[in-house]
Image (cartoon, rainbow over the protein chains, first blue to last red):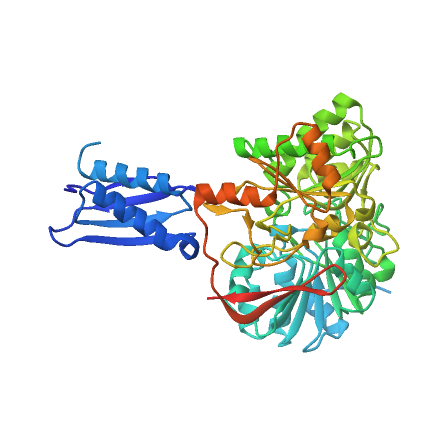
Length: 90
Length: 467
């Protein structure tokens, strides 16, 4: 469960800035994604974010994500860190 | 007689500027330039419209152009480079007529042979006398070389000097001479010093950039070209400057006495001149205060006109004798074609400048770039815009290794002999895609927003409006 607002990452080139906030149970994942490489990699970025959330058991959350051309491993680590902080684990 | 007139408006009136004519500007004041917008403000107030603007480069300080395009004051732009602010508006389709892109050599070539006539040239001059002798070397808005402005002054029907530092006649050590100038206007300020030249141009500290620079310098060393009489041009980008610094160390260690450094000149090239790496510098454009100081005080640091720098129709130009040039790229394709006009989403944010001129002239043209930037591999199947044709591009240097154009097998051989990591350009593309994934091509519309002319004035490529 996401208990609090949290964020991870930066707006540096090749990084990704992830903000996460709690949402009502059953409301699902609301993802607002912007990316400098939306045309080139938009669907892939969204898929990696959703897979990472699912893997961490996050079913309900509001995410605002600003991507600056991060590769998949960076996206995963920023999302995971934001989730841990949102759960109050980090 | 007196050429001094009271205002820009008076000069415009005396010059006979009318709807539909072509005016020109140079870009030596770079992002500090106030003159182009000042002149357009006057033109707008006088109700003149439908003008074609031939300006050697468009910077972000020229953002008011966008309003003048919308209002119909400016209906055509011809340039060699366009920064991201005006470039974005053009890419979004605000102009009915496509922009014409030339190169720094193609522009004076076309002006001189009459293919792109100028009705009235406006010459921003950091110092001038009352008869129009002018220079960029002194004055509160000093910018150094005025290389790009010569063809305008000499071939326009009317030429107007605009200065913020009027000195007694005759100006000593002038650049552009009075015999080409019709009118002189004094204004309070022609430019914002902080935007004209940077205080110091800085070498990159980015470890990736330093690896690229090290490979680039070692490749030049291994090329067989680095010997007495060596000539060289490099850009002002961080990795290019770092390569120049490493190259300087090699030249000093080996005692190589070069002939000339060329191009837009930075303090690092001045440092190489002072260290004896070159006999002279040919300077078409100063990038920083160190370069301005040097061109003012050192006779071996010489101003060159854009035509002398790079014109393909001159009897010879300095790029023809160039051994090595280091250049940048936003994209390079597997045929070695280079894009420096658009970003990876197709928005205009640059231009050839001297890129394709020096690539054509130099014995070895070298592109330095990281394997990928922000998830986008530098090597693509086909560049979004062909700015410089692949047959003139010899080497790509990335942090993961060097690709050599198959047209130059002897260079690949020499690099291998020097234990440099040589790869096929397709292999560099695969390396980058393994890390980043394979990008989809961005969408564009069918509307042409710019025609890219090669240095010989043939159509090289077209840029389309973004979606």
